[in-house]
Each structure stands twice: as C-alpha cells, then as structure tokens.
Image (cartoon, rainbow, N blue to C red; front, side, top):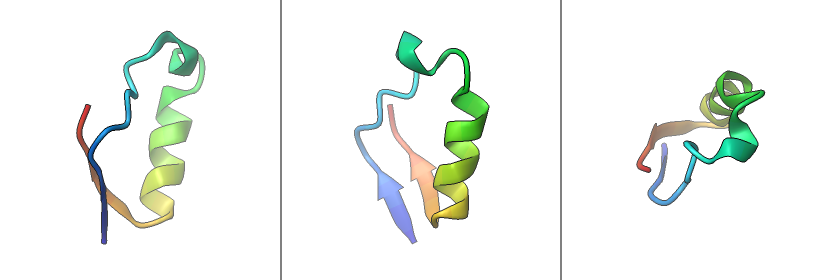
Length: 35
C-alpha cells in the first residue's frame, strides 16, 4: 500500500485526464492521495 502525500492532482495540467491519472495510481497500488 502506498500513500501519495503531495500529489497536486488539482493542477490544471490534469484537467483533461484526472480520472485516468487517479485510476492508474490506484492500479499501481496507491491507496490514498493527499493534495
């Protein structure tokens, strides 16, 4: 289990594919993301 404690997933560079980025992280074993 991994926790990304500094991901900045709210940045506009993720606007187009945020859901895909989050899903890839989950698939890689990331259990939580803190912004």
